[in-house]
Length: 134
Image (cartoon, rainbow, N blue to C red):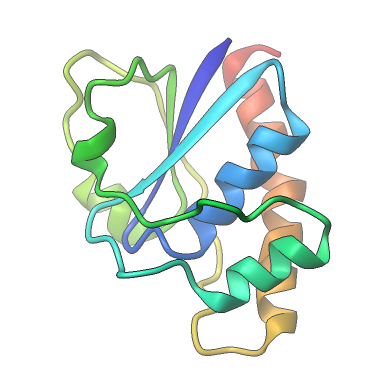
């Protein structure tokens, strides 16, 4: 099974939704982790609500620092915001990278989080499949 790291700045919204979507939709083929370069204290309520509205699991989600996943065997790093792309750390071994930015819905109504969730599902999942040759 391949492991994908979804990297964002705060690891409180887009990367969390991407982690849940990949783990759900690509279960058995891909294991997703998410982390942030400057993690926020908690996952955004809108991200939790958007995932729950789609019937996806939200139990145990919390922002993680990228240092917490540095020793994982990562097959692909996907940055989902421009800041994370610029500050993406150097991993212990070379790792292919993919940059696919998504709108940041923080402070916006639930509909914005749902739109970003759906955009992640529509664009990120096929890109991960292609990048990993699935």
